[in-house]
Length: 338
Image 1 (tube, rainbow, N blue to C red):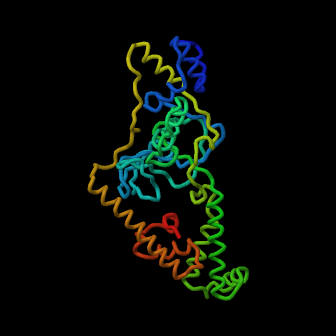
Image 2: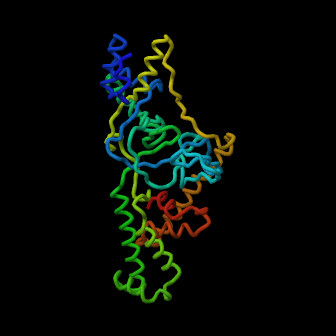
Image 3: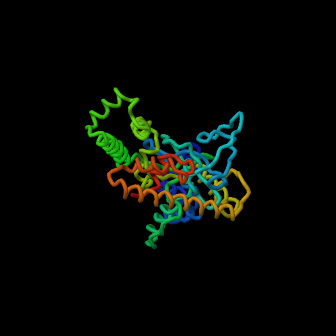
């Protein structure tokens, strides 16, 4: 085995094919690499040349609504002195499969360095697309899981990007909301804000709640997920596709001993949090869909009665009702279409 493996941490894909072709004394193509990666027999990694934004967390074997024990810090994997329990909800998790959830800490993180493709979401389709392009094959269909997932050990991240559209929507909601409440008192927005400062005690409960919401939206931190959306591609994050040196060594060792390549696990390890119950899973899925349908129905009713009111205001009204089931205004706002 060449000494170059002792000093290089990774190889580009072209360097990998050239190196393997030389070591094996037979041609190794990009198509072969992509096929091994798609079959989970070789791990493809990415170098984030520039920093990227991501949701960051871990994967648990659980369902929406389960109580999960956290034994390590969610975004670093460091062991906690004392474990703690928390519920997995649609506010802090995303489904990976019928019995696994990606649980995150509900803020945008900056990530860099080397990460492995987790092959859980759209990254698996991207690899299949690269392979089919090399062999002039068919375009792969969409996967069931959205988003691009990377991993370092037990820590996973889902790539996101700052959305100017979401920023504009929040700003428009604040502006239209202030205009609505100012209009209720036949005032301009500036006059209404002066009135608020001078006569706070004269405001109605609805006005106070609306102003508190506008203040919350105005003061959202830069890492708030309200400003972000899923990355549309790996390439928009300035990544370099590479194969780690350790993966090349593993491949060559397996060939030296005459055995098959040790396949990578198709299913990533997840921490067990409950005993599988298909009936419970079905009930929870139906309950979630029913909740969203109730929100949507009420949102349309409110919009019909109050056409000039903002989406945020409508979400705020729904949050006061029993159908909200304790969900936040932001969660309701994201799951209604008006």
